Length: 160
Length: 120
Image 1 (cartoon, rainbow over the protein chains, first blue to last red):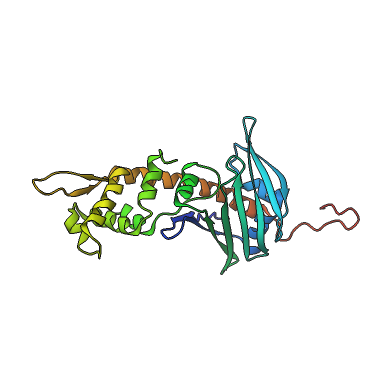
Image 2 (image 1 turned 30 degrees about the vertical axis):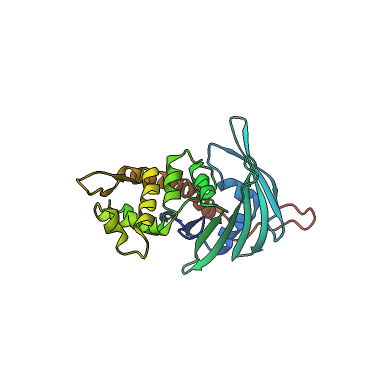
């Protein structure tokens, strides 16, 4: 089977402190969604290989909550949040907080779009409450998601 | 985080007018007067925007007689490109792990054993 590469696309929003991440998968929506909502499956891919993942709680239903830890050299990095809306094969709205910065929270929306040929486009957005927090989020290198380029900046970067 | 030069750059670029100014400086150096032309703003306002960009290290000002053209510092953008790319790469790595998992996943969730509730 040929492995197609679908490079992750990132954009930094210019209007609101938001990061957009877009990625396509060679798998149907049902599977991609399941990989996000089944804790056993989720634990297999969410963290880098060099980190051990431990899922403490994962109730991926509307009104449910989650908590997991990434462990490196005995240090634990705990992340938690609530599932605000979970619509199978369509949408996940959740919050995301790193325990080390409990006042900081990002509001994440994951939209699962069906593509022809049993493929899926995943469009995620992460919104925080200030540009400074958004930038700190990205600068921290936390395994949270990715940034996007300011649209005009993206164009600019190709010209200088 | 404000000590982080890249955060300063992002903050400086969070303003649409400043992004426009940067886009124009990418084409060539320009004075405050030249930069102010297309906008319905005062020279002071443009000057203030330039100071923020200077503070973030995005722009430098030189002196040519009476002119003080602003110049875009491309190195800062190289740094930003690398920074964003590093972040993108993290997401890409995560999604490649998901790619591998999806390929190995059965089409349907494993049925639960009715007597034990355990997955077969």
